[in-house]
Image 1 (cartoon, rainbow over the protein chains, first blue to last red):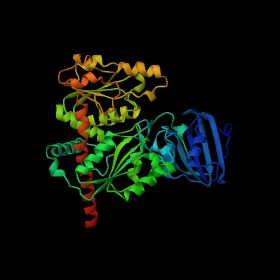
Image 2: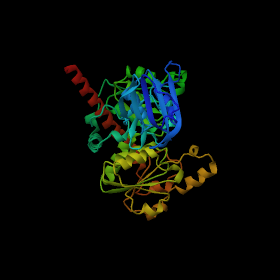
Image 3: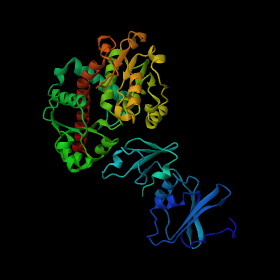
Image 4: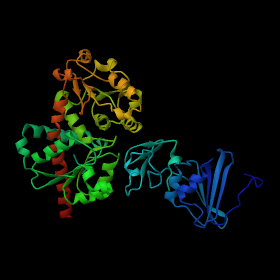
Length: 152
Length: 313
C-alpha cells in the first residue's frame, strides 16, 4: 500500500492484524474481546485494496500483544491473516495464524437443542475439523457461517 | 471394554462392542451366575423425558445383578421443575449412587454430565443425539441372528432425529456391513452423522424408497416417523404411509430377513408382520436386559478397577 493510500497511522507498540478477509475486522475485535472500553487505541481499516486478497481488513491494537491462543482462534475467520507485533514503531515479530485443535468459549452452537444453549454453566467447545468446527457436545458441524456464531 | 462412561457409539471400538456382547451372551446363557454380583451397589435412573423400555430394562438389569435402583421420578415432581441445572442435579445424585443412567431432551447432556461426576454415566438418549445402549442391544440381536460381518442392513424412517439410528450407523462402521439409508428427503441423516460415516470410509447408500433395496437386505431396521417433525399433518400422513411395511411388502424380501424396530411403533410396521418369521422386534426389546446387565457389569468393574488403582497409588 502506498503512502498516498495509507489511511491509518503507524502504531508505536502493539499488534497489527493484517490480511483479514474483507468484512471480518469487527469479528476479529469480538474474538479478541476488544470493544473499546479497555482504553487501548484501536484502528480498523475495512475493505482496503490488497494484492493478495483483492480487499482486506486491517486491525491495529495499541499497547496490546496477542497471545498464541488468541491468534489461533482468529484463524477460523481470517485464515490468511498475518500478525505483526510492533515495538517502538518496528515490526519485531511477524506470524501467520495456524489452526488450533479446538476453541473454547468463543462460538455459540447453532443447534438450539444443544445442552450448551440450555441454562447450564458450560463453555462451548468446538473441535477444529477439516473444513469447519464441530461442537464437542452435540456434534453439530459449522462451516462457512462460523463468524455468525462468535459469542464473546 | 475399557471405558468409564458410555456416552456415544462413536467411542466404541469393535473390541469394546464384542466384549460387551460376549458378556451379554454369557448373561443370557447363565443369568444365575450374575445374580447378586453387584449387591450393595446403587444405580440412579435419571430420566428427564419419558421412557418405558429403556427405564424398565435398566431397572430390571440392575436388579438382576443385585443392584438397588433409585429413580429421580418425573421431571415435574423433581427439583428440575424448580429450575435446577442438569449439572447441579447430577453432582448431587452422584453422591447417592455408584452409576447414573441419564436420558435428557438436549443433545450433549450426557457429555456434560460425565464431565461433572466421577461415577460411570450411561447415555440413555440425549435429544436427537445418541442412544448407545440401545445400539448394543441392537447389535446383540443382529449378531445372534446373522453375525456382524458380511451383512447388508437397511435403516428406514426418521434418520434425521432418530438417535437410535445415529448410534447404530456409527457402530456398524466397526464391522463389514453395507448400510442403506431409506427416508424421505426431509429426514435424511444429519451432516454430523454423515461426516463420521465418511471419516471411517464406510460404504453407505441413501434411498427414498425401500423397494429397490429390500431384496438384498439381511436386516431391515425400521424407526418411527414422528408427527411433530412435520409442520403440516397431511404431509406427515402422506410421508408416514410411504414408509409403512406390512406382510405383503415383505413378500419381496429374503426369507432370512430380520425386521427390527427400537419400539414403540405406531403404525410403521403393520401387526400382520408380527406373525411372520421376519419379526424380531420383541426379541430385540427383551435383549435389553442381558445387554444392559453386561454393560452395567462392565462399567462397574472398570470403576472398581480404577478405584483400586487410586488406592494403590
